[in-house]
Image (cartoon, rainbow, N blue to C red; front, side, top):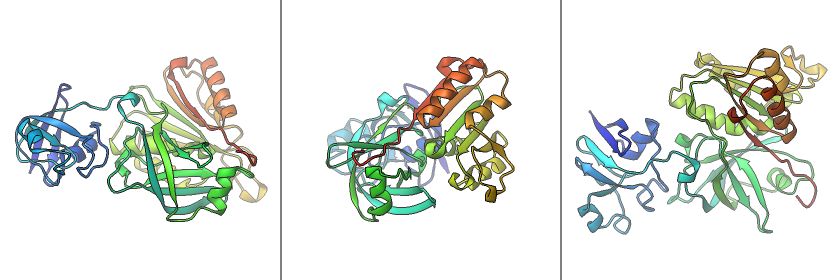
Length: 339
């Protein structure tokens, strides 16, 4: 059995299956209600019930008081419908709607994804979740006051752990720490979410251009898009210097098999003889230029080294891409003992 929920003032509607909370069902349907902890502790998801009844669940008394309930308020991360509902709540529609937080976190898992890329999975305190738009990033706050930025590679639907991809920069202070010192259960501080690199609503086909670990935010964006059955045409060009630098290539290859509206084109800049590479070669953005004579009807999302992003912007606009349809996140790889 399911119940229908209508959000005011937007008029958006979604169904809640038995056992689901209002928040779980809304996020699953693609409607971003605000939240912070998902366990009734923070109050970020508090909204008003205009019609219908709910089981308030395990909402904490200090967060949802008796007076709150009398006024028709509920915590949507805990509340489960007992009948059809009309609720009043502010929806997250842009970066400005998402609070930026400073939080402690624990290293839950470390995994080498290839010879120079480490996968890092972070766990937040049980009373916290990080709401973010797919494509955004977080900063590590280091003890010397410096920051190091890493894109979130997981989709918002999979936020029990935060996934990051870190490329080893020889001599880089923090990446040397990640590869040689960091261990499971280490405690760190993060700040986020940050950035404006996320998929805009459009009917235009989307071209994604990733260089190296620029795949991380694009992984988040595409996983989220597939989860919500986005049907626009999408293609990913992913470039690496050698074939061995292309980590997780089986994932976008699997997406290509599963989704008719998605294709994956790996591009290897300088394949080694022993790699026996027979696919596309050269600079990744030049592969896009070779395939598209006119980019005027597209959106482009580019992420990677600044030189690649700058070249892509220049050459794609020259090929007809409207400047306002180029979205990017340029990674500054910081090396040297002071970095």
